[in-house]
Length: 170
Ligand SMILES: Cc1cc2nc3c(=O)[nH]c(=O)nc-3n(C[C@H](O)[C@H](O)[C@H](O)COP(=O)(O)O)c2cc1C
Image (tube, rainbow, N blue to C red):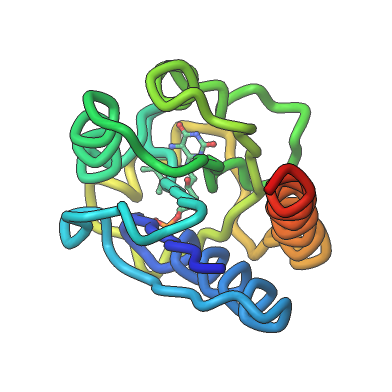
């Protein structure tokens, strides 16, 4: 089984979620490639695509939206999507982006999941610090590795059941 994990962000948190998922997939005996969205050209060889984006100002990273646009007009493997954003509470509906909804529809994605992210004020540009200061968001590391790993395991289970059904049909 071959899985492509493709993520983009600004400060690394989204990439770490993708890397953790890749470890779960590899542990489940999948062959995993991790690539940035702009370097994804062909997807025919994969059994699944996992695409993730950081959320800034309720928008996905443009490079991720571009990948979604490139994939949406051709056949592609099953897709799972995730957003990395909210900083202190999943109750704060800042992550409900139109980009995620659009991508889910365009790629007929199996699911879209939002994971809490991480924010270190010292890493932000001056402009980002100004936005952060007026946002009411909290600084800190809110990444939930158990949720991330469980979601990746659910993807593996889904792919295994499809594979099993295909073998039974053959
Ligand atoms: C300027 C700025 C704007 C942000 N806007 C949002 C937002 O609209 N929604 C959200 O859920 N998180 C928002 N965040 C939080 C980031 O999505 C979070 O820090 C995430 O982990 C960043 O991922 P990255 O390190 O991969 O860039 C914002 C953070 C900053 C600094």
